[in-house]
Image (cartoon, rainbow, N blue to C red):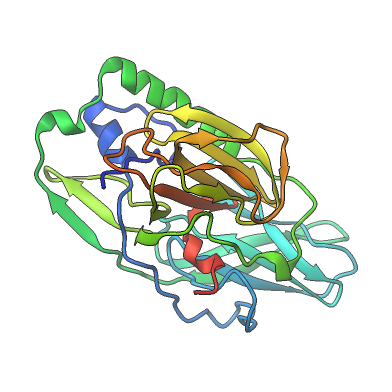
Length: 304
């Protein structure tokens, strides 16, 4: 099942037609595994979501300690400071940090604004993780874009980068971050697999693929508000949901979209149906999760 997805988190840059397609496709992946948290990370609470995996494509859970009001925390992104989701109460606040798939293993840090002015730094460690890789040889035309398709791809990538920058309140409560799988079906791929076509690497698969028949209902994984819908070159019919605090989800390749921007949905509310729109070879759902503008493994938000 050939699925091709725009790497929304990538910074806009000049692209050749071949590089655009090779960099834009995400395919099946093996499930990501959790790694031991660094000593400064907040401990994983049994039954709390998301799970911690301080690896590229994972999530760090960092203790900010007690404070009378919710602290404001940021992480450095490609275009400047990116606000973080902070959960908890006056007794204990926790920052959730989405780690980009392109992150280099090693030391990283976030900044926290102090009530009296100034800021403090909190360090954490990004641990290495090797995702699966698949090498394929295909006809050159398979990995080329026409000038028209390349121009459309670049327009859509710029638009989606704006969608990914959404950060709104209210923040979701910590106990409510366990997500519902958007559609029933076999998880035909998960996250992180990188395919190499004709010796040229493309961006790793940045979501979870779920095999399901065309027309299978697709529902909201958490309460949220529809912030974008459209028909995109690679992703086909797509819906974006805002769950608050920089936590977003997207579903792609839909055969039908039943919602519009501004609609408020509860967990389990229908938003569309599985399809095969966009650059795919068969019906399935591509499900992506964004945290502080980084695509992270959806499996971290699931109980199994």
